[in-house]
Amino acid sequence: MSGIENARAFRKALGAFATGVTIVTTRDANGEPIGVTASSFNSVSLDPPLVLWSLAKSSLSRQAFSDSGYFAVHVLAEGQEHMADRFARSGEDKFAGLDWDHCERGSPLFNDFAARFECQLVHEYDGGDHVILVGEVNRFDTKDHPPLLYHGGSYGQFRELDRSAEEPGKPSLTGPNS
Ligand SMILES: Cc1cc2nc3c(=O)[nH]c(=O)nc-3n(C[C@H](O)[C@H](O)[C@H](O)COP(=O)(O)O)c2cc1C
Image 1: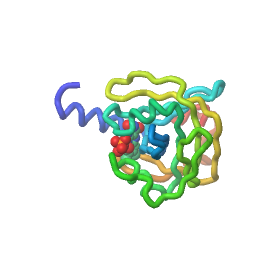
Image 2 (image 1 turned 90 degrees about the horizontal axis):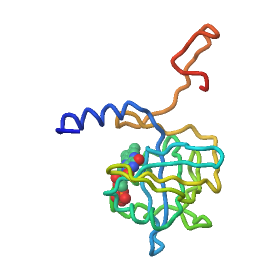
Image 3 (image 1 turned 60 degrees about the vertical axis):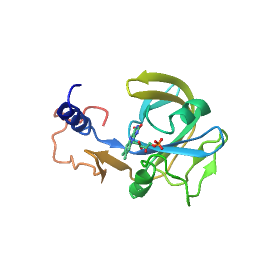
């Protein structure tokens, strides 16, 4: 990637891929809670149950995630933009004034989420200026909340399409699994 214009265009193109928003938490060597907003979360495998996300090598939290060996992923619900903003600010005391529980392996757990996955770190891969963290899911929970979405640098809401007027069997943009 050469030149700032290309880098900007690349970021913009990547932003065309709409995602959910997560906060991933762990604990550092002193037992302090650590958390980062991440949209790079994705599913990997059902059996064994694996998920992944990627973390910038420049992140202040990077060492804690590698050392702890455990993390918890909170898939945010609509209305939790303030939490996403808070955990995207590098180096601040992100947990000040918040309530959380510790899971068995120490990762801080929030009680508001659309889904939550408690994971053991099983692989860490180099990914350029990021590391790719793969976790095996030990526990998960879901709540019936609509998800917070992220697209082109902005937060948004999910709106289901009305497809009742479409002919059955007609090829569509959304594919067979949707
Ligand atoms: C919506 C959104 C998604 C983000 N996704 C990621 C991500 O997937 N990986 C990452 O390393 N940083 C991501 N960030 C940036 C981090 O949240 C941010 O750099 C954070 O401040 C790192 O905290 P730390 O330096 O205290 O560890 C995202 C930020 C926002 C607002």
